[in-house]
Length: 322
Ligand code: CP
Ligand code: NVA
Image 1: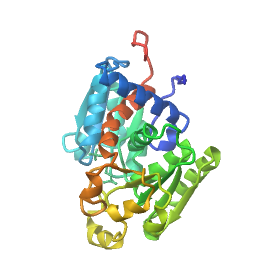
Image 2 (image 1 turned 30 degrees about the vertical axis):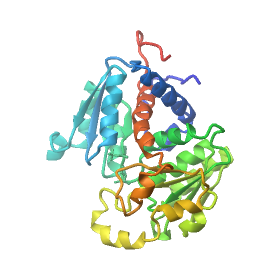
Image 3 (image 1 turned 60 degrees about the horizontal axis):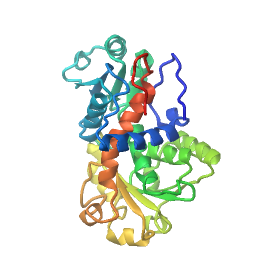
Image 4 (image 1 turned 180 degrees about the vertical axis):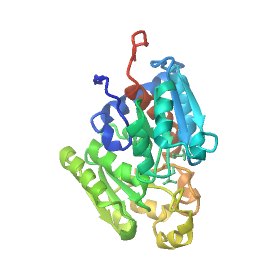
């Protein structure tokens, strides 16, 4: 697929922002993975710089974005708010205006989606959401890539069952699945389901792709026809004050060997990581033969490369992709 290039900057704040690009991102990330394994890093965006602002800890997202920028022929600059003037009260708007004069893209992990929107509003370069309290869109590109490479027949007719907290990861996953035509079931306690506007957005995408979005309260009933199971932590970064209540409320929502046995025998298990082993998922499942979790983590790198390449406009002299 040819990606159209405009002079208008394109942000990735929600997975819905790249609905039209998602099939291309999955194809391109898969191709980049194959190329990288044969030793070709694919430096298609040489000389570009990325500012990576992380308000919260990160192992995968930070490292994969830094390596992705290096592979593409550019450079990533990690910035923690403690070391930025942002931490001393400089506004997000002024930070966006200044960084846009130095770098070609800003990758931002924020506590608040309102701060994410503010940064994108004032930045004149693309802003990529590296997780906030509402969404985690880059994660979902890697997740869908992981499933796509396992299902040669595509997403149509397959069912993904997410078990646990209806959090930022689920909010992007439910929309991403609906965009590509993958049926999704959220086995999520009622009090933890996503905001209505996100569910409506997912249902609109599902209507177009011919897939379904459903919610269930009983994980055992939910997993019966599952082609894949997915879970995330019960206590996200920022939710720590609620830890005890959450751990009580999510009892019964653990992916363990017994629950996995109720799914199809060829069902894959995903987790975006970091995992709290023994809480939302057991060691036996994580380290077992149905876990696609480590490929999923690796795919963050290939997905970031495809995302960065798509959002960084090409320049004369850039090597042609493939
Ligand atoms: N899955 C994910 O985003 O992991 P990190 O918090 O380590 O970046
Ligand atoms: N829902 C988790 C995802 C971590 C990658 C969190 O926000 O902490």
